[in-house]
Image (cartoon, rainbow, N blue to C red; front, side, top):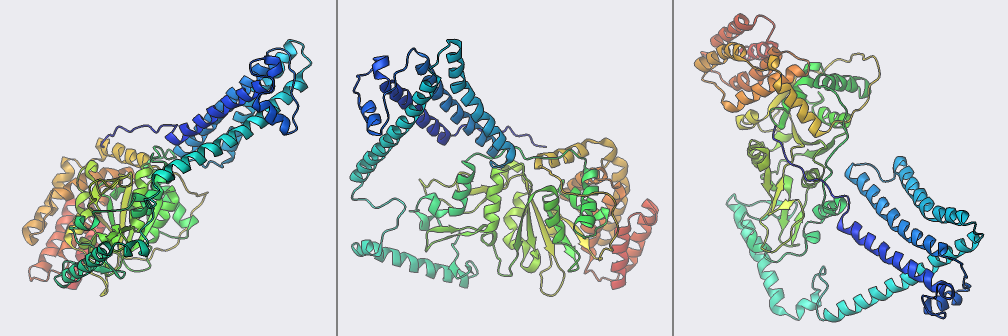
Length: 607
């Protein structure tokens, strides 16, 4: 498994430091105000200073304190106000990074402990000092601290209003003839410049004509009444507004996470076999959905070899329910995309730049994929519901190719950005990354309303066929959901691959090779390194899930190789299928590779 060096999240952002700076400024004003209120005692400031006069105007009386304890108490209060704010910001940031609700009762207990500790270390220490020196001024000191807090707060607020007013005056005076940065020109503004409005209209009609011409030639498309851009869209986005307007959804996700991803997701400690068994029991007892353990093992083990699974078969057999409830079971995020017959390219799932509004039309798929980059340890499942109602190799072509690259190269280009445009944080030069926590599931029916799935897609995915409605069964004991992080799941896969007893060894390859060589010689059907790599990963992972090697090999043989004979009607097919069935019995025995035996007998019945 590829190892990455992760950057740790800072517990203090620039916004946090700005708050700390503002609080430190208030602490200085607090000490300054306290010294002014006791001018006659401390003799640091004039007896009739402005702060004291302001306090008297509020009806407060000058306080005469003896000794330095009152000033020490004031300094301690100012110090621990800063300490409390720093600690509180740290706790809030800790909750966000570790995906804990800031309103969780445990966090409230932490806030309360921090507050009480700071009070005891400021006012409490002051009271202790008064007791040590046997001073009877505790009431006077308390009144002094309270007045200092009140007066300093009012002074601080007035200074803040003054600074903000001056800043607004200066900024708007300098930019008096310029429009607001995030506001488009009004129609009246454009009427003052006929060339600009003519240029906009001409450009718009040019783009419309170009798009319709492209559609006539098979190179363009219309979607939802908006003209989709061609691949050469750089010329039409020369001047874009700020990223929060062009990519409002992506920008809002940046704001949500403050630009920093969450490194860890909570997870339970369990094995792959326990994961399969617990999910199997949870479906039956918790959701009244019944699958056999083999199906559950195939579903979970397959992701060790490829991130795309296809659940194919009869309608109503639970194809859509399986990924939905698996996400619920492991506390993952699931995104459903009902595939439309009009989908022709990647813009159908990733969105497109709208040249009229100068904004990017964001899809739920794009937003979920972008959000997954900020939470890389949370498993994200993307379900392409009825994926073959349009041609998969059209709208999903980029993903089919990219997911075969090393994970460091898993990124898709969504648009060409103009020079100087600052995109959302996770949109690097117009590319969005497909993080390793992304898993794709396609459901497919076989009827007259759908397209057949090509071998290109089948070879890159693992396919589970649902041909039976499972019968209910009873589960004893308690069942419930678990927490599973992506790092934990990938470590389970990695550990399974390292167990030599479960690996696809030379003896397994020799027996399996006898069957596949016969299929190649008699039917001219073979497989390449892609499927061989999948075998080497799925076999040990499936065994770690509690299954047997023969079951995993049977699954791959039936779905990856024998399935390619469907639709062949040459005269030599049927007798050679009988020979293939006999060979499987000789090599593995009867009723061992049951899926392959069933597939072969089904093909023979068609002939």
